[in-house]
View 1 (cartoon, rainbow, N blue to C red):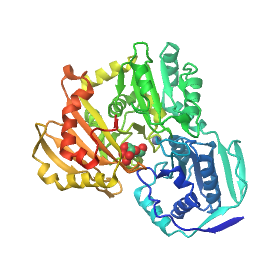
View 2 (cartoon, protein in one colour):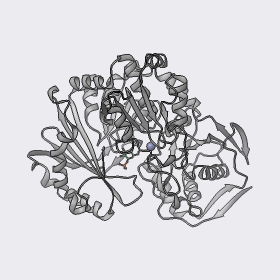
View 3 (cartoon, rainbow, N blue to C red):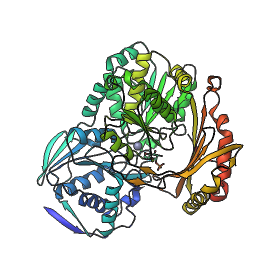
View 4 (tube, rainbow, N blue to C red):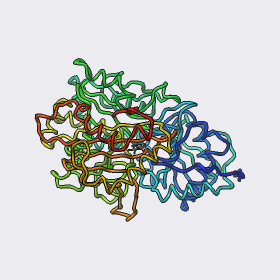
Length: 542
Ligand code: G1P
Ligand code: ZN
């Protein structure tokens, strides 16, 4: 029943920051999925008899792709395939399942926060045995293999019934359809004080969580509404839909503007939150107080010990380079490790595996810990609920206390999306060429102390990642970072990250846009953004 099918390679199957991500139509080309999946499996030498986890965020083409993955995996010798019911697994839940089931890895079908539907995006990523994204050495090997592939193998059989829990056989492979929520929920119940959070809901905390028509709906309903007793209906858009119900499941101030507006009203929820397509990102907004992801990371690092799973304290904090330095201030005060890594969750894996850090985060709304090897949206929301339940304070008061203690790192990110790729590369090239002359020069009335391109030497495996973004560090502690996105599917996206530190408590409650205006103008000028991109202002400000 195993068929070997001749095929021709596609030259464009290079995985980016988080797997291979393209338009749905690209994935629908004949053998496109088959080729890439076979290329991945060819790079897993120990797959014979091994366990594999498979699931996705429920977006358009999820079910079709999962059937292909299962049939190809069965033909490639995997012994046991664990798949989420309905083809559903959030990214953090998949990471957890890989770990608790002792799988050799997992195939996660998702394009994260990118839009879904027939005209939207699709994606395939491979996670390894620690539950985290495959390292660059693996994805590069898979890319190389994809360019040479001439056959793939699959088991010819009827489709697996993904909607019925239980075990079936496919050729010589066991296929097990599992509840996508159960193991994940059990993990959350171990980490957080559910009794205390339940009490807080009982005493009237007003909470709203938007699953944005994507994967977290079933998780949020089970955990917030059923296990924690949050009021029915506090989970919005809680059914995963192939087109996410038309939502763009990116939990930021643009795509979740309705949450922000509600939270700014005097009668708004005490805590509003959201997650993205595959459930690894988070948005946290208190009444009258948006919490920037960089600040959220710092608050979580400072307060993690209030949750039972972290009562013994944390080993350290890691943040991606463009993330603000707020968490570093906490780590220094706690006397724990702090690491600055390139963008992308995979760099945290080695630090977590080595026990060097416990809490990790990125400015792009990703926060997580040693409990899995992916960022975790619902985990961040539960951590905030746990913090509020113990401290008995509003989000705004938690933030004010935090800034008073550590100072405030004002922060904003400007994105220029779908710009011409050549122009974007030229802009970065021009900056790179001027680094030596920028260092020591004045910009916007301030002295640049360091101008460089970030590179990272992994302290665990010694691998070097270069070209990870251009940094301008100013003498007064402020910073501009320029970087091209690795996850876009159309043209290029330029990200400009701006940061300014303020120690004076009298200046902790200013309007962020006003505080950042001068440094934002300096960034536009120094990189000549209008000249290289044809854009006068960013598309997204987060
Ligand atoms: C973006 C974020 C990055 C995150 C990645 C995957 O990548 O900036 O922090 O790890 O998505 O969610 P980028 O498009 O910037 O390469
Ligand atoms: Zn995501």
